[in-house]
Image 1 (cartoon, each protein chain N blue to C red):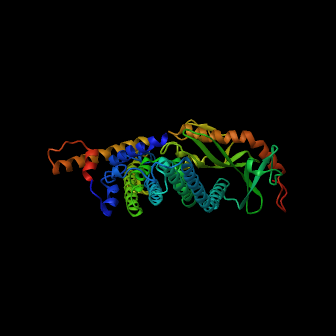
Image 2 (cartoon, one colour):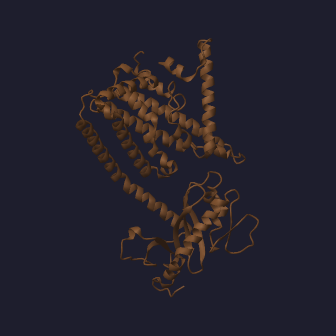
Image 3 (tube, each protein chain N blue to C red):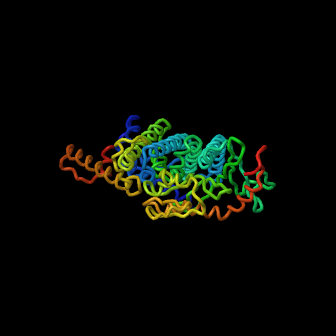
Length: 220
Length: 247
């Protein structure tokens, strides 16, 4: 394994190791709150904030956190940031806070965040931890907004609440219901997998079409 | 004895993390000082971390709480204005010992309450009542205006609902359904579309959202059953504004 450059630290989470589209982490919020672009943005930004804050603290405190209790300490740090995000959202954008409901509190158990602490922030200096968290957080945000855009456009005929298709459009209501989340994620993953496989075949035509894991290792 | 095991757990975790995070070197192993950490140090670290986390949350809470309360008061004021048709001001009255009073003796925090709206001439125009009951998905909270003199409902607004988007949530968005609550006699009777017989107490339920519509109607009826008499009694004996001789 080679050492990575700062740029790779940042970009990795956005594309090659996108938490939702590649690692399939954090699917619960990705399915549950992406019924509108606004909710997706709020959820993505809240998660971004929690991930960034937790990574900075974990990276700074890594010398003082005994490894026997590191998971408890990470969860404590994450839970603190989530509670802060919850209170701030409730005070600043109460309507969105109401729409996201319990899913803000559930950021605590988003395995993507704990995963970054254990795999990255606890091993690297704070600068790289910030880049990694920013990249992963941005990747999560982008994935959520893609899903939110598709679901709101089809399910409500609007984008960020602004009608797009005019009054004659009959919304596909199922797209903003829970099944629509699964449909959207399924089609996005299908498209992603197809694109990756095609790319892999172009590079190495005889390559075993095994998909995600091999590709991630290859990427590093 | 656990200290012998834990470093191994740490190493395997490092390897596991390496699979997810190829850039991370598994050989760097765990975090922290090593395997000689005493229980006191472990507990102490978590206690200090917990105390600091608690302090941070309290500080943010103190900043956020007034803002949250202002918002909630604003939402309530807007809703009261809407269901009472734009009163000049409103006053909160509390249910104490079975009767409503504007000046309760006990602690108001646990008391049931309603909001009396007053018009520009100082006369009371109606009472706004909050009520909540389970709907199709979750609890629906509504606020409705009530005129104890006539027994009519003056208006209805859904404060909170998680009804199905596109179907049940029409109880908030369907203007015909919402408008039907203005001036309807109580107890309200829910009828299906095209089956009404023109009674004053009829509200036509939304096609495709019958359960949610029925829930809103039941919430209002049940609430009126429970406190309607107390409101009527308050209305009859309420302090009249100066220069007015009853209504």
